[in-house]
Image 1 (cartoon, helix red, strand yellow):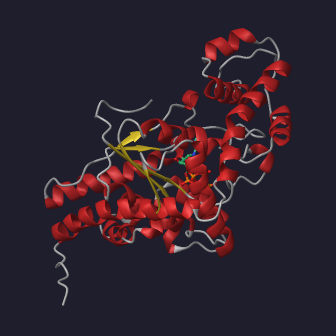
Image 2: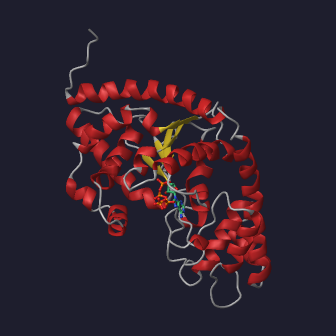
Image 3: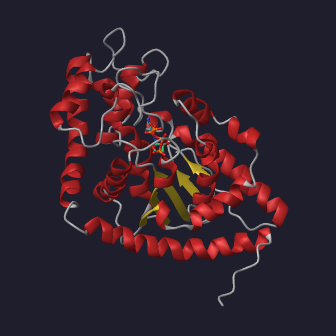
Length: 337
Ligand code: AQP
């Protein structure tokens, strides 16, 4: 795991409720949420305000927000251990987001790869799409997080958060924790590639749905998608990102779903047929219990109750820390009349 020896004490991460979650989101981010909840104080949010940086159908966003919360719990985040909440339920994030906008530069935001990629796909580019890394910085810094578990694609945004935190510490005296990335290597799932084109990232907004395994895909669909996944020339099952990106991607998935090492997998197969079948079965055995739990969590009021408690817990911490930022920036605290 690409991290430093700074102790993991407080963790924040979030996922956008945009479309259906993919296996990339699960292994790159959520799997580590589940692990870290037992090692540190953890805050996991559904970043609904980030989703608004590109046009969203309101009803779809509403449903995706509750579904993502169900998936968090179904995947193993225990709401009695970690705090699960919706970003917009804690308005302090947006307020600190403004202070972050006033602490970052247009030049650095314009250089963000994700901004360049996503804005190229939009007919009109919202201001929020550009300033979104500022809100992400606020999400992290408002909990004084020591670590942020994300996939490789978020490294640049996290670097920006670190730059802003360092800038604030220079300007106002040390008061912000500079967060460390907690990013798996590619072989550990930090960048899962599309099944149909291993040069592209598996992603909620990938044009070809056959390139993604969605967390709620039924077993038959998973089996078919893996069968059709692009493999490479030859028959060897070896980990070689450059020359065998398709096979390497499937090996990572098999390794993460079964606990076998890449070497063990390589030694086991001498062709793609049985290998692909085993990859599909391993994915199904991880996803099926999650899918069943999601259905149970559709009982009326269950997820809403978890989110209500989570927002209360998160808000208490966020408001306390926001007061420190406000004071350092020189904003007069409000007195109640
Ligand atoms: N392919 C991936 N491999 C490993 N990790 C991944 N993540 C995303 N794709 C992969 C990680 O999942 C978390 C979700 O982040 P997000 O919802 O804020 O958006 P994202 O990073 O932009 O993820 P997507 O799926 O690619 O969404 P769209 O298509 O909307 O842009 C992050 O920790 C991310 O690194």
